[in-house]
Length: 135
Length: 143
Image (cartoon, rainbow over all chains, first blue to last red; front, side, top):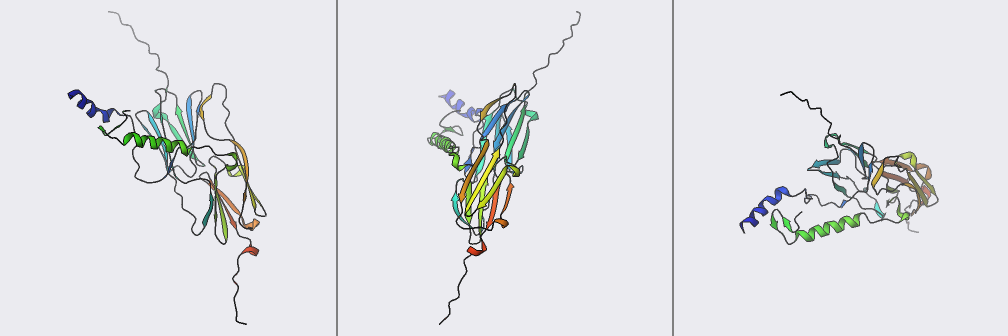
């Protein structure tokens, strides 16, 4: 019984990042993404219509890359909505990165409602010459 | 990830909430039929129609809007990137190519006064109502 309790206590620390409840009650969509691997980087492109660089948040924590975008949409004042094919909402998507990404050099750009992330591949550990001393 | 545990305590609703969350995510990317691309909304007032379309990643020169009678035709082109030698897609979900669709408007509009602009990947088209079709109130006099 004693071991069980210890396990319960250490679990919150060891848990991977879990999606917390949002304080806003907005609809949340999963944006469509393309993931392209080039020679020296991985490029993630996400469709987030309605966002700009101010309303997009990209965070990296414990190898989890999180993309969040908020959309600020105001309904036209005195117009009636006749026909709708989409809902307005925020965007959220998270990915687990491998060790092969250089997390310090990640770049993010937003243009025309599309977020483009460039994740450079980590350089392999350079070979080091080890001096051999006599003695 | 320990199923059923929240904040270190067993929570009977945790698994149900995860299930609901996963199902919501599944439905949010429900594939749309080709006729509904790009997705639009149509708003109307007595004097003006507003058409909004989701066109992420499309520049203004790749969008064409035309009106004939009460039919609006919207065509959008988005180029896809073809991987070169040594490149490959792990995932490819975004649509590319050319689509065209027509929308029936509830009334005639002044074609010369139609304005269209793109911002943050959203297209907004304002179509003022044709003068001849604006409702006029008629004064009723006693005979």
